[in-house]
Length: 266
Image 1 (cartoon, rainbow, N blue to C red):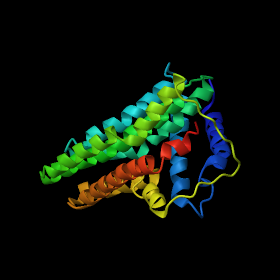
Image 2: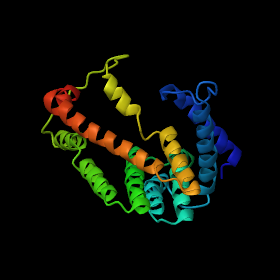
Image 3: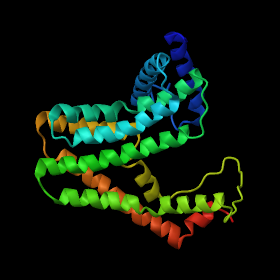
């Protein structure tokens, strides 16, 4: 058994090394005070979870699956229309990424290797993002009884289902695996792709990063606590507008600008 203090030190050491790949420095309190605080919450929780996992047969991939499932359950709680469950759902949305920080730590402690761990983490993030937005739309319907919100939720799920970028990647990967397509990878140092100002704005506006999700959860919590009526509607509409813009933007880039061809050099 590895001591809790050793696991905690390993966790902090690992996160310090990963700083080189981050867009921010989780040890720079002056520049990123909230990021530093939230990172320490994740580190402390993941250290506790990893320590306790030693007394169970649970694997790193199973923790990743719990992470995936937690986003779905948080959404179910949020649409329950029961205050205590809705607040619990918001709390899960707020803290669930600590599980994402746990699975890799458990894999190192138990010396487990997996080819699907990273895919599960990415899938869990995807599930959490969709769950937050769809449950927010149904939450708006519960508050207003306006069927337009159910229509918008269905529209949002539909455009996520037919997303051209995901389908293109899926088809390209299928053809590469089955040797119907060849890819030449060009490795360049310090290559930066210039992006349109609108693209940069959409990437950072109402994104799935912790700071945005936490702010949304805080606003909805205040709405539940003080019986506000408009905050959730505004947030959901902003999410929906972004989804529509991205959907048509991707079609434009991939159809008119040969976006996929520029990424996969035949």
